[in-house]
Image (cartoon, rainbow, N blue to C red; front, side, top):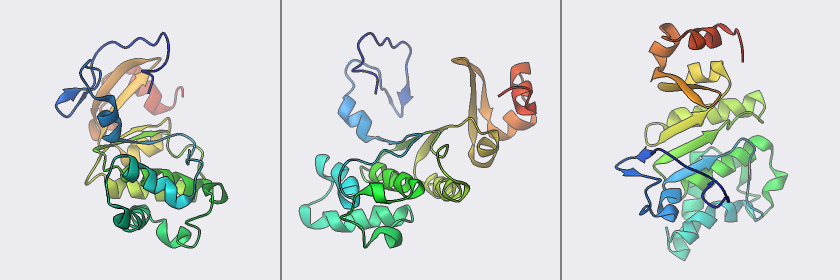
Length: 199
């Protein structure tokens, strides 16, 4: 996302499957298609509920015109939103609650058939009920997708994580399986964080 920013400097590698996303020969559009993003605040596109999900299908040619409606319904069902919006498909997403908007954004991201779901504090702006719904979706979706979440909520990391990378001031402090991370942290900074000495 930062490749268009003047002065942005990138070093190192990020390997997604069998390729480096920062390699000069990497197709950026294809890479973006492989990743669905769920931002900190819901960011529906300025179009109808239906078109938010159909947009990615159309630009990536992921369905004929007569298949689009069925696919939109499928992804809205997948995120538990279809019954709530089936009579509002041509309305603005601004009329939906924040939790509904976040699930709509997840449906939009899933519609491009990604391999990875990236969640940047995906529940931080949501109420507890909506947070629970998103977390339940992550549990269901992890069978098919690699889900990478950024969270500052330790309880959420305990509930959701299989593997944790703990970062502090831009540095990786510790990484490992979640069970080991919480039960047997190796670094004092990690121990202090888990103990609640700082946040």
